[in-house]
Image (tube, rainbow, N blue to C red; front, side, top):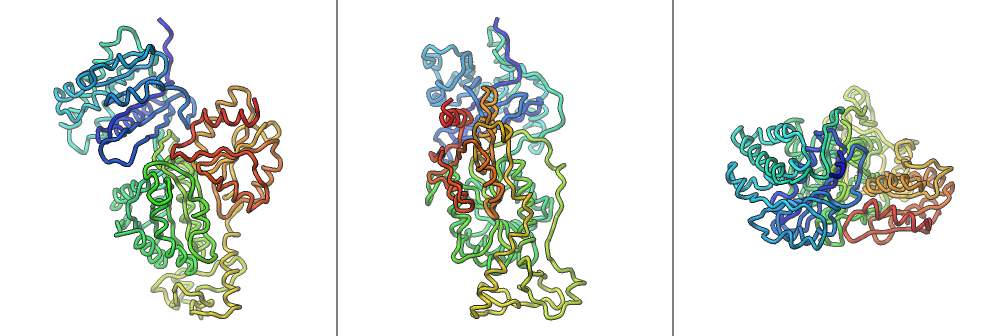
Length: 585
């Protein structure tokens, strides 16, 4: 008997939409997380409510993991199509779990591959446990039985998940999982090639970008959310609504994105930390209100989770093609902050920072997520321990306003940031409109006032600390690196995994991840580019938008670029291979 691998595996579940594919993948991932492993989970699905082909993919290891490397060791196939589509992605000796009543000839599809086929009457077993709807829970139990995972972990998790439905429902799901668990244990003629052993460690979180952004917003004191649902940002609305009463938040599902943007502008004017979330199509509708926020100097936060465009494009697939749009949306010139976090931890921290910055520099802040980041989960330490402090900027107190005389809401100042008061405060009445204005807010078409106001607003971003916007570096030391790999946003996750692959092969790569597109850390970026032996950029768009921004801000042109714009995220092995091609290794 060959030696069993321990605590390192890749898993996939596939089937039509509506069969619980994502739920099963998430439960599998959380079981491994609760076993003490590092876990990565991501999904793939077309824009169909029911039908089509959906997958959820999981990678687990004892080492940090931010991408899937290699082939899959377990495949749960909820239909025949899943086996046919993914047979070539299975490793030697991989297990295929399927419903034997629905797929009669699964083993004939093997095409000579050495695979373990476990056909079980999943639906029948679920019915016997309490309901056919739990057939995917039976399959989950079967996969855990393969890995010899402690069933107590599954039981505890199902009890917690189904507690709100009552003991009867929880017990039925546990019985369904146990039926699958026992089936796979008894059906195997010899132990499966991989087993999972419990690893004792501090509690972790298994969380995706949208979930982390919501936690960051709540931590920052967001009290008003106006949003029209649009994939892949919709779960932000759902999560905020779920926490509405817990944290005293008003959540409004608006009639459209135009209303959402105008509502958060009004809330921001009133002194309430407010936000909306959307994708590129919805953000397009918000552009007029965005300009209004800019000229009124109203603090608001917009989460824009990118998907494939233009127009409806590919609604459920990922892209990094809204960068230049976010930087230049709305007519005229006004400063805005644009942040592109790269993983769930950064989503949490930068969501919090977004609310601070919106009030500090009194302008809209756009947080660029994308479908891949929004819906990909990784294991992280409890980031709620990260020290974060609310900063409301130049917000006048009641006492300060009582002493104020001739209050000028848009007063000229060296840093461009004017004192801000709230409606109802004594001596604080002022005009707030979409027109150009003087220091008091009254409309002015004087050319000197116009220049002064444009310059005043432009100065505001300079007050943001350089250490906050600076890029982050990973991998080899600058003096040893054969190449500087430049990326931004969610490309960070697969790029980090690619660095691990390259390091194992002795290829020394340094990675620069850019989070802030506005204000742009031009000096830090230029210094890194000029010091590098060789440079390449990886982006999820067809026009190398970050490369264009870098050239605009620094004058440096990155010649080597690898672009992906088929709607799918980068894969670590893909990045590693392309880096070696660039280096001709």
